[in-house]
Amino acid sequence: MDSNGLIHNTARCEINVAGVEPSLYTVKAVFILDNDGNRLLSKYYDPELYPTMKEQKNFENNVFSKTHKADNEIAFLEGMTIVYKSSIDLFFYVVGSAQENELMLMSVLNCLFDSISHILRKNVERRCLLDNMEGVFLAVDEIIDGGVILESDSQQVLQKVNYRADDNPLTEQSVAQHLTEKLALTTNVLQSAKEQIKWSILK
Image (cartoon, rainbow, N blue to C red; front, side):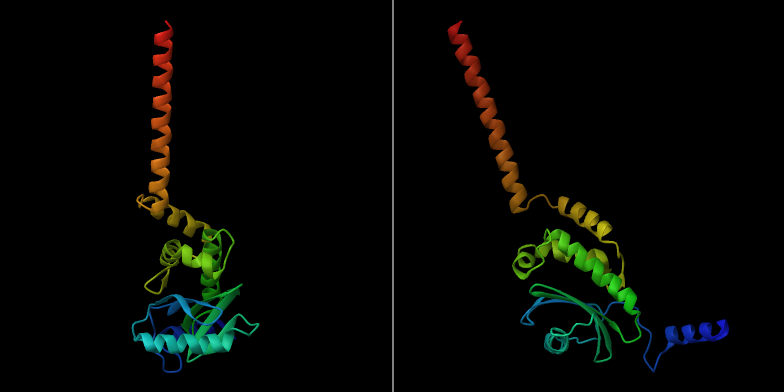
């Protein structure tokens, strides 16, 4: 195909393909299901796509039934392009329009999976995910904002997630660590005071 034809087709894709209006939402939705198809995390970015919880759940059930036993990584369902990946008892999905570039959606999926894998210390399974939901949500928000892809490099995502986590020091773990350090400091001070008293008496 000549360059004029390629430019013409590209322009047509950006403006209107098969009567579909152009969309600002590169990513329509992201969701994670367990191996029974139950929702663990979901974010829908296009307000016109399945606006009610019931519609979203129906869509997720349809996606899960079509993909959970398949060996493919890409599915086309209800006018959507869906890329997905599984690990133990989890299924990760990234949804775009039928015209969206599958490689772009796959780069988002891989970034999401790699980021979460690191957050979960390679234990990518349901229990660990539920124990670390705050970090998982932070990772999703660093990768996608309002359907727009912000980042596809998991290392950059992890740096930003760690930075944001440090901005909230009053977590249960950090409070416990802080109290432990204070207790250790107090113990050292008391021990030092006892030593000083003992030597002063001996003198």
